[in-house]
Every structure is written in structure tokens, then in C-alpha cells.
Length: 343
Ligand code: FA5
Image (cartoon, rainbow, N blue to C red; front, side, top):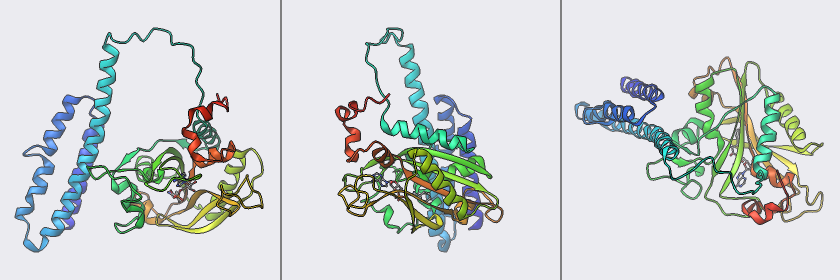
């Protein structure tokens, strides 16, 4: 069975390498036949179950089907990108649009979330971080398993997660990009990746079903909780442009140990409880912690040599705080946003 695990791993790697070099739909079709056709590598791998002893069939089926699911999702991602590029090329060649016609004079403005995302990017870049991007659609592996979120974890519940028909998910957090970043850059690495997250939860003044987060990781030798605390404090002070009261609460995330939640003092009520902070006088802004060694290992990083911290802050929530917007839903309201005259 160990043999089949490494065989599955090899086929996944082979597919990833083949797809990395594909830039047109014709070659993509050749890859499809090579892996998913009648005599394709994945088809043969799954079909080979008939030659496996009965007592090993269950495990074999699970492993190969998971590989097949992963491969299909990976292939579909690439196809979606190439389809989009083909469409753009088609539109550019079409005579239906004249790209040189000047636009009617309407000056747009940046959305508050874009503004704070740009500000955070500058702050982190000045601290040596690279700015990367995650996907809005991810495999369950990247959104959950690579972060030690087991099959029975409540976060996977249909009530929280939007599942697509092909088994992939709308990312529930930007942590879903961690595994790809570890694999891409190895260690040491400092990276942030802002992105949109989706959760099927009740909407209120501080919760939306779709919101932006900003994830950060720093992996190096000799990183400790002290480095994490220093970073969280200095980043938030820089971002707010003034001294802001911050507290860390011990918390639990499967992918960090120890884990914390970061709260900032509610700017609306101070010490008098208000509705925005649900009468607690604190607003939760981020989750963070020391990256679990197993998460590093799953990303191909030697956890005996390297340690690191990760954080995921609510960019949308941060924007509401910074601009004094009392209800997160106003961020969808164009008329409301106009009054800020944001550029
Ligand atoms: C997470 O999403 C973890 N992935 C964060 C993390 C990353 C922890 C790396 C450790 C290491 P949490 O569910 O607490 O954690 O969300 C993080 C932040 O996103 C919250 O503090 C909050 O500011 C914001 N957030 C969460 N849910 C919503 C929502 N429904 N609407 C708006 N903002 C939200």
C-alpha cells in the first residue's frame, strides 16, 4: 500500500509538471487524454483495483479516488485559466469593440478594502515580505487537510462551507493558500496573501458571507512567539497610524500551536459597551499562532530546522474600523461609499 501512495504522489506531481508547461488548449487536450483518456494514467491507476487483493481494495479505492479528484480539480483550474485567456484573445481580435475610444468622463474611486489592502501591502513589503495571491476556489486538501482540519471538524459543515459540485470549495479562509506558498518558496520565507473568503453564516454588523482577509507567514530558523507578538503589535500600530489598544486571547486553530485571537479596543464605545462590539468593548481582528510542525512538513519544509508564525486578519473588518463604518454591509452600498470621496 505504501507503494501505491508513492505512485499516487508521483502521478500528481507528473500532472502538475505537465500542466505548468501548457499554454494552449490544444496541448491541454493532449494532457487530458494522457491522464484521463481510456488508457490515461489516472484511468489505469483507478481501474487497476481489479488486480488488487480483496483485503486491500478499500484502501486502494480511497487513495486512487482521492488522487483522481485532486487531478480533476487541478486540471479544471488550468482549463478555466486557458478558457479565459482564449476568450480575452477572441474579444481583442473582435471588431465589436474599439478599445481606442475614450471613456465617458466618470472618475472612479478605490474601495476602502482595496485601500487598506494596499496600505498593509506597503507595510509588509517594508518588512521584507513578498505579496502573493491565493485562489478563491480550492481543493478540500488545501482549505482543510493541509491545515490539519480533519474530516469531522465543524468548520467543514455544510452550514459554514460553500461546496462546489466537483467537491472543491469556495475558500473559507486565506490560510488555504499556505500549502501552495510553502511548496513554491520553501524556507526561509516571508509572505502575505490578501484574498476573499466565503462562509455560509448569518450576516450582521461585523459578519458577512463574503469578506476579505490578509494572511501572513514568516518561516525561518529560531522564530518564537515573541517575534509574533512584536509583529502583530507593530503592524497594527502602523496600519491605524496611532497607538491602539490590542489584546491577545489564547485560542485554538488546528494549524497553529499555540494559537491566539487578536482583538482591538472598540473605537465606538470605548469603555461603554455598544452594539457594534456586541457590548464586549473589543472587536476581533485576526487569528494567529506558531505554525504547527505538521503543516510545515506537509508543505515540504523541515520542521526540525524551521519554525514560523502565521496570522489571518479580517481586512474587511479592519476597513470598517479604520473608516468608522458601523455596519459591514455598507461596504456593498455604492451610494454610501460615495460620501467618502475615496480615491
Ligand atoms: C481564520 O480564518 C484563520 N484562518 C486565521 C489564522 C491564520 C489563524 C493563520 C492562525 C494562523 P478566523 O475565523 O478567526 O480565523 O478569521 C480571521 C479574521 O477574519 C477574524 O478575526 C475576522 O476579523 C475576520 N472574519 C472572520 N469571519 C468573518 C465574517 N463572517 N465577516 C467579516 N470578517 C470575518
